[in-house]
Length: 269
Image 1 (tube, rainbow, N blue to C red):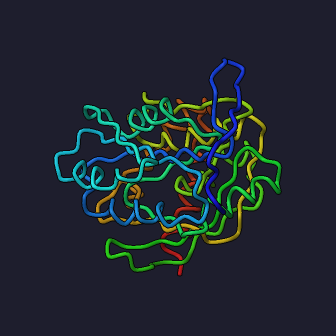
Image 2 (image 1 turned 60 degrees about the vertical axis):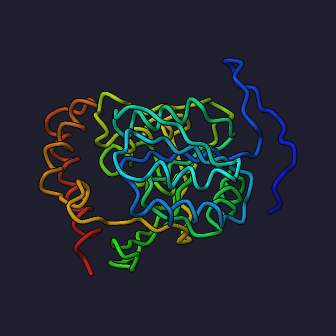
């Protein structure tokens, strides 16, 4: 797709204006120098070129900012710097500055295939949806593919999301033009805030759609919180109980379902 020279404006109910067809890519970064070049390059190679990349540096102490600045000859790449406040605050900072009709979250160590945006926007239009996701593969710290790909659930309802997060954060695209911007819950201290975000988005119409095509690569890093399921059990239980307001038995059920799903996702060959 050729990049539009001029984009029409979409006016929201709160009088805020978005640029039609533009994708706002929100990328938080904290000490991401090891992988961020590969991630930025995956955005630069997109066949859909109407995008802005907002990189929010969350008080990095490494060389991340210098690497980001080296890409700013492309005016679509914008650097926002803030004192360390966590990924949810960083993402919200980017969302506040976003101008696009569409919004996507991409962490600074994950990768999109070149046709990710083109395929996802086409899929969204075909489904007449405000939120879509897709299948994705998993890679290690050397970018080698590991485990089996995660295949997106075809139809994801609000009820589905009450126990399992069926939206891979790096694969979700939200059309902001109908309901406006949605922000992450900073009070969650950057744990499961992306899960809560997509619950809020899907609740707007009760459904999202999963593209079966593998269009992204999620990086599994040693020692990461998402890689240690035992430590996450209590966090998930409290999330279901305190954030989703589930009763004791429902919270235990949801935690158990999450655990079983996670086992097959990470340990089943």
